[in-house]
Length: 291
Image (cartoon, rainbow, N blue to C red; front, side, top):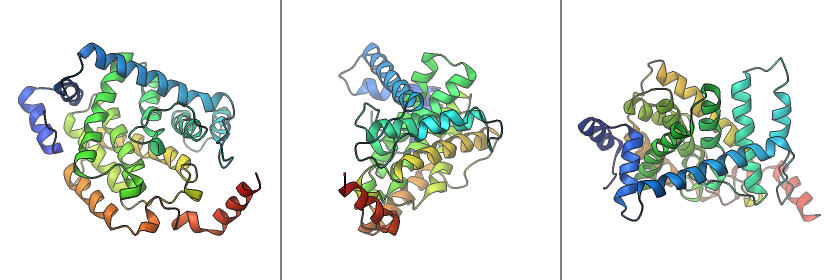
């Protein structure tokens, strides 16, 4: 079973009267080396790691090996007791989950690369937060992940998910698109709405560069995970309210690929430009040398 474009996937959904998660399951089964039971066991393992990595940093300070980041998800978790939050409990907790995953990653802990380690917090934070809020069961979470996987495969096939190739739009942008598609499914949206949400997420971050300080997936990566989950969740509400993307999903993927490959090397995970070349980055570099 070859997955080529979002348009073809939507046609397949119509022809077979299937949801996106069912197409995702069909794709996994078509690879020929897994049974449905094996696939669901693997999804359960993924969910367990998602839950662990999104919780660990909220319960205690997790510091990266370099010392550049750490403890922020615990701060955000503590902030949940503040009755003067600008947004609300749900969104702030989702950001805490996203940054927790990033901190665990930077501390060499176990995470799920969704679709990459640098963007590992966005999908877990979005899916687990929505599941918690609406008391969705494990089966709904499995299906949400299968939905997200279809979107991720389309980026792999038609663009890139690598910051070194396409900037952070390809990592946090793809993760946001995958997360939004999954959340829309969880809330009863249609396959088309899932693709609309994915498209809008990409439009929101098109051109986002990859400029990690010292070449480490820490600054500004962790905080981009927080903004990435906000992107996904807010766009989900837009689409569920009836908003459509005027630019089709497939066109957004093509644009991401074109923009990403046009970025100068300084803005593609080389630490030669952007935030990585600021005075603040130089100070951080000197601090690490003293460790």
